[in-house]
Image (cartoon, rainbow, N blue to C red):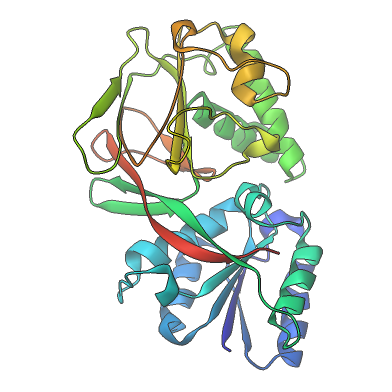
Length: 326
């Protein structure tokens, strides 16, 4: 078994994790550890690793590190494999400022427990626990990305506030800090404070399967936020999807600018005991296989911000990878 570990030593502010992986590589000769501090270094490491001969890819980092690695794996890998079985199984070690993807996939929450679980599973006397999970592929003009979560509108405003105010001001790079930015964004929306409540020109078209049955939503008052994901749990445990058909893997929610936000907020977050908001109140949630998102402002994939090339994003979930359940 050949194992490649990508480790972002700056993620989460704990550089000692790289040393732990390097110490583990001394015990397991099959393990190669590469330090990557940015997307370019991660892509170079993956390109040099000849992934066709690697059985397992460990990613030690946050949502952004994972997003860049998986985008390269699915869309920029020159071999262009056709199925998840042709790609390495992925082990996610949550080491970032936000770890939404790893926390949804893994059974444990911490970096060290996840690493311990991985070591046990690759031992000869313990079978590995793998699950195939769909990713959200995003086509933006001639660019292709892959991740687990796509957001726009107030979600982007919250990420910008977290990056430019909280983390730039020295706040701890933890999920609770991102949760504080989320709370500040909600407060800004409720108080109608710019930039949090800015009106976004947005239209969503979604399709089921390969048919031409297209549902389109274009709020006359503009959109407040858009979120799409193949995950069950989002930041701070939020579960903002309630659409049908339940079996469809791509879920999204669109909130109109004039929605009854305060009344619908508990149900939007999926808090126990609160009913889900309805379309008549400005809240739309659907499950589908493909989404066309028309927008004229920035969007986010797993916390990383991008500018749209031509104002139209194509989202689908036609690619999947195998993940260790750590």
